[in-house]
Length: 501
Image 1 (cartoon, rainbow, N blue to C red):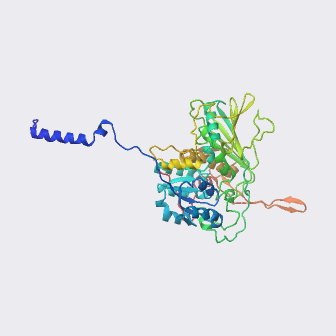
Image 2: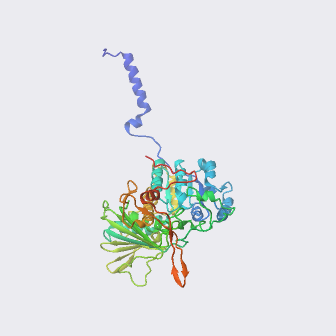
Image 3: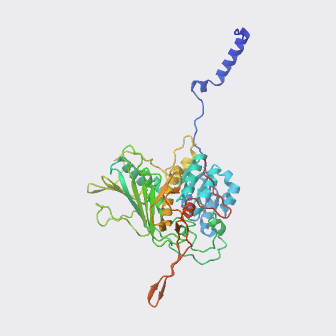
C-alpha cells in the first residue's frame, strides 16, 4: 500500500474537507440554526359534528375561529344553530350526516368538535385524528374501556391537540382541590365518596313502542355503529343518555365533572376491583339509581403525598353518601349537581361538581380553599376550557402544552367511568370483580357463569293486590358479555379501529 500522498492529492482532500466544514459547521459544533417552532397565528378551520345540544355550547366558545362545516342528524333540533352560523360564517356548509361532511371537507379542516351521543364519539374522533386533525370531544369521551384506550393512543400517535368536554378540568376550583390534596394538608386519602343529583332524563325504562321517525331526522345516522332498532321519540334528542346502546346514564354524564379531581388529585390509573348495585337492572335502559365502588392500588408517592390503596364510591339517582363529621348542620353537600368528599388522615376536603367551591374540614373548622396557601402543582387556565384547546391546537406539537383534559389523561380517566358501567351491568354475578387494567380484562368471572337483565316488570293490581310477572332476557355467557362491554362490536358497516402498536 502506498502511504505517500502527492501535493495534488493532499490539496484535493483538504479542499473537500474544508467544503464539508462550510456546509455543516453548525451541526458539527452543536450550534444548530434550526428555526424554533412558532404557534399558528390564523384562525382554526373547524368542523362540528352534533351541534343541536351540548355542541351548541361548545361552538359558542369557539366563535373566534372559522366554522367550515356543521353536521347533525336532527335538523329540527339543530336548526337554530345552523341558522346562526349560516349568517356568521356564510361559507359554512351544513350536513345531515358527518360522513358526507368528512368526505368533502375533512382534508380542508384543522380541527373537529364532536358532541354527538356517547356511542358515536369514538368512531368520529378516531377518523378525525387518523386524518391528523385536532379533536375536542364532549364527555364522556367514550362508552367503553377499549374506545377510551383507542382514542388516547391515536392522539399520541398522530400528535394532535385534544380536549374532553369536562369544562371543570379548567376551573379554579379543580386547581385548588388538586393543589391542596397533593400538598398533603389532609394527609393520605384512603376513601372518597362522590355523588350526583342526576339523572334528570328518563331511566329505568322498558322498550318503547315503535314509531316513524320525522323527516327532519336521519335515523340511520343517529344509530351509527349501534344495533339497529326502530325509532321512538324517547331516544333522542338528549334522552339518549338513559339507554345502554347510546349512553352511559348519570354516571357517564356527571362523573366526568365530579371525579376529575379524584382521578388527577390522587394520581389514579386503573382500578383493581369493582362492584356495582342498582335499582332494577333493565336490559336496555340505565337504572334509576346506582352505587359503584372502585378500589385502586397503592401508587408511587407524590412529593408531598403518600398514595395508599383508596376506595372511590359513587352514588346517583337520589342516593347520597353519609355526611362527613364536622360538617355543620344545614349545609347541603350538593354543590352545583354533586360533590366529591376526600377522607384524609388529617382532614376532609369537599369539592363540588366541576370542582366548584371546594372547602376543607379540619381541626373543627370549615375553610374554603384559597390560592397561595399551598404550593401550586396544577396548571391554571386563564381562558375558557375551549379556548385553552384552541391554544393547544395552534402550538406545534414540539412545544405544545397539553390542555387540562387532553386525551392522554381523559382516556384513562373515562376508563374509570366505563368500569363503573361494567360493574352495574355485571352485578348479577354477585361478586367483586377483579380487573387487569393493562390488558383490559376481568380475571375472576367464572367459566360458564351467566347474566341476565329485566325486560318487563309485569306489574298489575289483581284483586286489590300488587302482582309482578317479570320477564328477563335469556341468560348469556358472562365472560362473552363482559368482553363486549369492554370492546363493543360495531354494526351497520362501521368498523372499530384496532389499537395502534
